[in-house]
Image 1 (tube, rainbow, N blue to C red):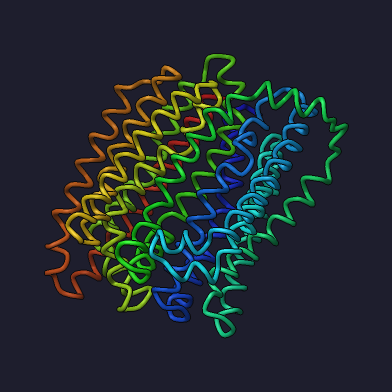
Image 2: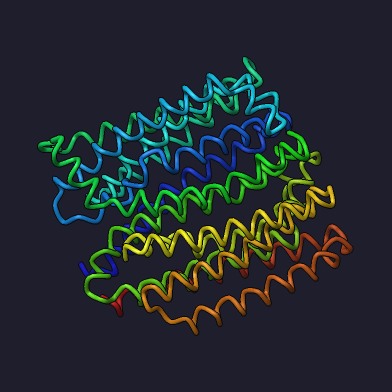
Length: 473
């Protein structure tokens, strides 16, 4: 089978698991918003954000090196190294939180953290191990197993969150962590079903030195990226309250879930193909095509959210969650650019240019934090979200530009794509007022027509992908 067709098949396989897991999340979210209050979503956002900040460096980013070496034995020793580091990081975070959890809760102005702080090291351990086993499966190109694990994870999390809603107010958080733990156990069984070979102390030390650039630069870049994603929820809880953080968390969850799942699915296949393409000098074509297709995928959804986000959220999650729809309207900017950028960020690791990636992550974080600071200065939650999203949009385009330059991809195509996308998004903001003024029956006809056009649009995009894959093959 031609390489491009094989890669496309792998993406579609992972997207199948992604679609199934997202379907579960979509049908469960309206029920969860009626079982839990916004401040309980705020607790989930706060603790999961702290878990996210730590788990991104739980294995010192050595997990990103697992798919790269030719030798499976080298990859297995990298996995062993990762597991050891995960245990150390989880243990240290547990020790620190036991001693200083009250000081941390006071510092970020969230006393509720004192009730749930012990779930943070548990979450770090679970997520850290999941990442290690996932990258082993990526290296072995066993994408069906990853797809199944994603389905199982979503199903477990939702089931436990619903089950625990009548038992404890922390059911959202506890169900989230335990559901992830069950998925990690499942993935571990598959990963260990394939012979690991000999894992030795000297070999582990050798691979830690060989791939030292991953923790030196990759850990910093990963931490900066994670900070950009997770610090907003912590800041919103600290400066505006748990209810506002919960509103942001729901909007972010609805938008981030498909972005992270689709982005990870594409990134995993991309990472399995990219090292070989980089060695043969054909990576730039893959990067340009991938960015174009992902932008085409995300742009229509972003436009619809900007125009009718409040109405969509009020209808699906209940009238009390309309403000989350307004937040989603601004986060739609981030949705479009993050979806088209996230998988391509792997080029810094493939090209072993982690230092460059670290610098760009720092730039992105500064722009995001500056945006939030504007909202804090004016004491306006909505202003903070809007400025954060605009800063992230600009930052991601700069980040992508440097990533494409690193592998000598076509920058003119990139700039043209995002110039057109920016015009469409700007027009969508102008259409907001018109959409709210028209009557209900007109909205119904416009929605039906838009849905038909959207389906046609995605059919054309899919056909173009299939045709390009045949040509490349």
